[in-house]
Amino acid sequence: MPSEDGKIRYGVVGGGSISQGAFMPGVGQTDNSVLAALVTGDPQKAEKLAALYGIKAYRYEDYDKLLKSGEIDAVYVATPNFRHTEFVIPALEAGIHVLLEKPMATSEADCHAMIEAANRTGSKLMVAYRLHSEPGTLEIIERVRAGEFGEPRLFTSTFTQTVKASNHRSKHGFAAGPVPDMGPYPLNMVRQLFGDEPIEVTAFGSKDPKHDIGTWDTVTVALRFPGERLAHFTVSYSLPDSERFQLIGSEGEVEASPCFGYGEGVAIGYRAKRGDSCREHVHPVVDQFAGETAYFSACILNDQTPEADGQEGWRDVRVVAAIERALQTGRPQTLEHVPGRRGPQRSQAREFPLAKVPEMIDTESPTE
Image 1 (cartoon, rainbow, N blue to C red):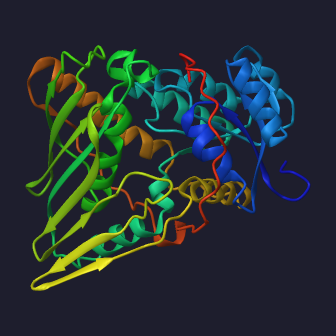
Image 2 (image 1 turned 135 degrees about the vertical axis):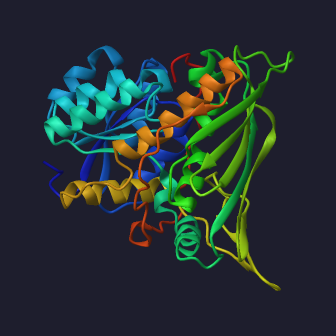
């Protein structure tokens, strides 16, 4: 049951940068969600964050106690990718709803196990595609799908950042590398804009000897979609920050930058071109984490299935798995075609002012 004032009570699993710097502050911006607990393997984070937010802290070893405590209705899981399953399935089986950071899992089998657990127990599972509640992004998707730029034919994107060698993402091979970590952004975007699923995957990777992360640090992916439509994107852990995408249709184009990020100064605007007309569309900075949390809490309170459910998460993971196979074999990978989905709707948009972020507590935990 929700709190006495009708708010969904969240336990945060993982005290890393995305939890501290985005999710935990964002929850306070909503009117239907509240923080109730933190699960972390770092005693300093446990003490300081629990005091800051007035919540209880649990060790990873005591996770089961939290699930049985009656203190929470949902968990937000933001552990490293390869630890998602161990926290998601027990929560779902305990009747606790789950908001799960992307990528959903490191294998298709784990995705299916989560989906089956949610179906079996009736607990709600949503993958944290925060852009599915971001107003500017939803406007682009709606306009493209409405045919305002003709038939969408070509998608290109670049998404890069420099990840420190000390970060846990640099220490766990492909499963924590740029393809699973950053790839779902351009991949999910092109799937929404095309309204369809890829049928063939090709990938090329490089390894910078000065930036050894145990896997490809820069990867370019090419996708073939039904109807002779093409997409390609590049993700990297070893280049300066950059993010952009371009969608070219038979009658115009859309270009956005920034397009995948969040936080102070990140307003998702875009340039739309049709014929000789070119117009800039600017949207305000919003708290994307507050938006996705408010949407998920509304789904729980109203007993509705969230749009970005486990099936949505699996559709990206299956392509990520094909990208890994393409990198390993040097050969294109064929994907079974599955029907496109309805995708996010404008009604999912939420506009909350950006939360003030407290000073980060960074102890370089290897698991957060």
